[in-house]
Amino acid sequence: MTGALTDFGVNANSDVYYTGHYWNDLDQVRRMLNERVSGDPERTWVEHFAQRVGRTFERALILNCGNGHVERGLVEQGLVRAAVGIDYSVELLAEARAAADAAGLPLTYHQMDTNTAAFPDGPYDLVVNFAAAHHIARIDTVFRALCDLLPDDGWFVSWDYVGPHRNQYAHEAWEAAWRVNRTLPEALRQEMRYPHLPTMLATDPTEAIHSELILPTFDRYFRVDEEVRLGGAIAYLLLTHNDRLHAAPEAERAPWVERILEADREYCATHPDDSLFAWFTGQPDKAVLADAALLARWREEEDEREAAARTEGGEYYPHTALQDLTLELEAQRVATDHARIELAETRHHLEHLLASFPVKQLKAVAASPALRRARAAIGRRVGSR
Picture 1 (cartoon, rainbow, N blue to C red):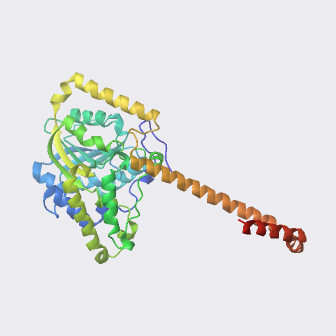
Picture 2 (tube, rainbow, N blue to C red):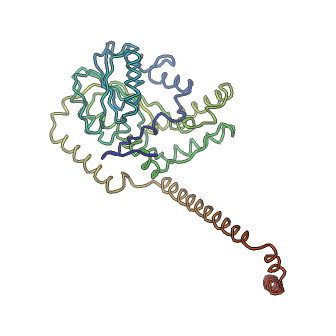
Picture 3 (cartoon, one colour):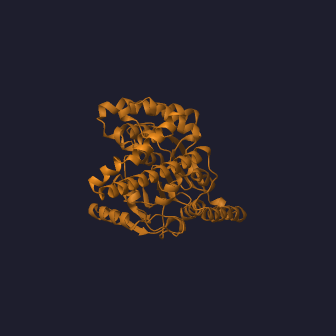
């Protein structure tokens, strides 16, 4: 089921979020991600960032906050004193408010479309993007506004999916994941299905809408302090939504998860640009906001890109060979399903017609001389070929 969509394709139906099993539900994956960010599998990104900046933030803005788990953790761990969360989903904001009230935390929430960049009044000294920016269509507009919103010593902290837009993975990465998947016991293998773009556009058109533009746009408006590629080209594909593996006893799955993570490390070491996730932090570069000509050019590029996508049904780029093959296979599957339905309906109709004839009449027809002669003639013609 889909909800009403905004002009920027924001899905009002929150049911598409927080569903299924993700790779970071596994302790082995969380430890791996911690180590890549902080150098210590036991130290989270929050603890790492707090140690790195050595300060407590007065008021944070949380982009696309969802059910509020991120800001609750930030306040409870002492990194921020108060926070403001924004999201489009009324249902998720209700969950966030209820949890904050129950815990007595200084958190407030506003319902809005992040694409408008009409943020609640500040001041803010920290902006947190936790898996939020890959849902933003007006990525330049939003990052520009955040650069302007933060003070010179403010920080923008991000943990996000930065892989191919709308999960249209590169052929080499998909093939590498496929090969690793075939080495797993059959009971733990992923059912690999390449993301079907029309389905994504129908269910959640914001998913990874401009994930490939997040890091370049961040570099436009912020002085980068840290940028760490977190991998996932193989591990994310094989561990996320792999229900059979997640359901297996830990002792059974653990060595295979480690094998997948090792394959992911090896692949991403030689293909860093194929990393699906990144940790990156920085402070606003106010100088860029003074370059009116450059800002105008970026705004024009964004306007043209979004206008063109609206005329193309939400698509931004030419199809790859793998994407076209997926579309063709899906079309054949649908056609086959329809044919099966029609055949079943025809069989049911025929059975209904036969049931309406008296049994004696059917036997008489079967035993008639005319039917016997016709069968014999058909047999002679077939046998002569």
